Length: 245
Image 1 (spheres, rainbow, N blue to C red):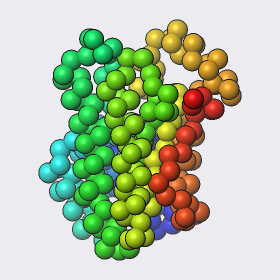
Image 2: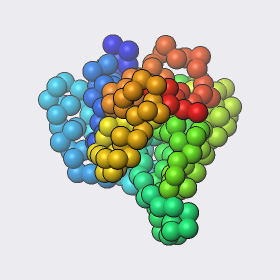
Image 3: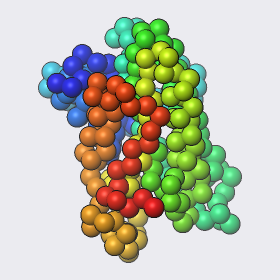
């Protein structure tokens, strides 16, 4: 087991990539702190416990700093430490620049960017104290190549790459690695909402000729969270079938 006895906090862990990561980490021996805004998290945590994994669920909005700080304190009290933070929670509010509302901009910034800041700032002191930690955040390959109609989303995902590099510099002295992953097109409930013609048009731009599945990203999270990546920090691992350009 690659994460035996590690304590992993996963945001947005009840659906899609987050759920795949939660399940994969549990199979690899981690104890799970599951955060989501969906009540489905209760069922996920209950299932994990039935399978023999120690797991707790908390309904947390990562954009709310006070809520995050309180939930981190509760998790620390329960488990005594937090070894891994997966900043996976994210939303989209797609619109072209000339049509995007201030609210659509603010909503995406609050979850995708401020949420990552809030969670990392709350967990980092615990990792510093224990002189060990793995922090991994969700960027996107659109941070590298851009994407029509996603000014807000691309801005957050580009910023995550920059923050990752800064935090790797700042926290490395405490035995903490900081990395991010840039997924390409992954089949999830979120991408299922995309028009079918857009989905079909994307395939020729992917050298492997297909979309990925949530487990493809969970595998990346697992590698960066494991001791195999103990000398890997400050990188953005692109997992997109070769589509980044």
